[in-house]
Length: 22
Image (tube, rainbow, N blue to C red):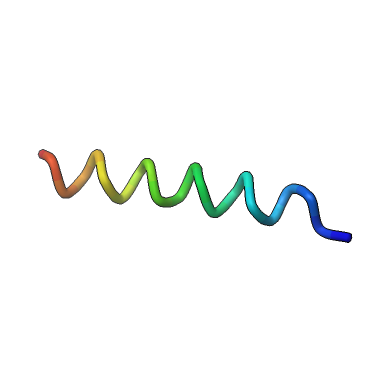
């Protein structure tokens, strides 16, 4: 039902990974 939910999760994870990498 919430297809964008997974997308947002992926983007959020990517952002967190970027911050952690920094």
